[in-house]
Length: 295
Image (cartoon, rainbow, N blue to C red; front, side, top):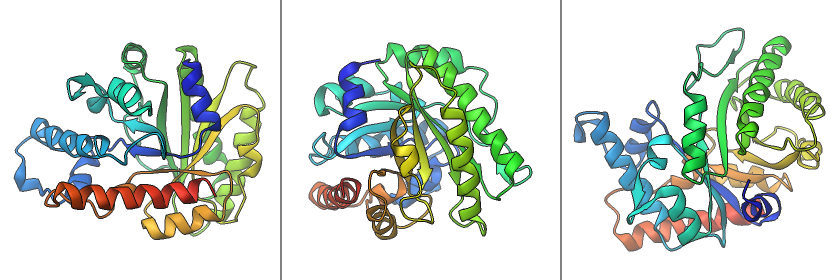
């Protein structure tokens, strides 16, 4: 673990930029940016376009360590370069931003109100490559749609089991058991989830530290106990489909919770914008999210 990066992640002021849309979500991300599916013919061309979009974001003047602690990358982004440097090295050496890697392979089909993560047979080699590429930590997502206690236990168990594998590689995992913001029993799911997270956190050894990425809770301040837990480096919030305005509004009501936004960060950015228009829009978004994250 890079101690300087760990200090930034634990105590720094700012938020995490989520730039980790993967194969399944890339077309939607590009569409939001104004790039339609008829503008590319295959996955290679699609990933070229999304890397160009991410490069434009990362190289923007306001995308810097004054406001942003870390950026979550997709595997293809980690394996590509920005201005001749591997993306993770560019983030850290040029921007002072901690690089994090999304490692899950997507969601399994919904069973009993939840979606576990798909198997990750190549996780070991991916983590080795992450270490070689100077990645600090990882992120992996599963989804809770209903307040099914046994199913939520399975979600948390899977997250911690894989999290311990990641820790053993010297990386810090972000566990992301997302509660669907449209769930009719979101509040009850969050209650079960917090209880399970606390149980598993209390079993971690002295050197096992994690981060948590959670949906903004229905009850203000609900995750304070997790934020203050000695085994938790940071608790961050996903936007989960909320608009940037709503995400920011809800974040203000949860002191200690910082943003890790994707769609809410890139909202309003388009390929047709001039560099000034693009940078102004992104800069305003960054400042808005930053202010809510340090409130």
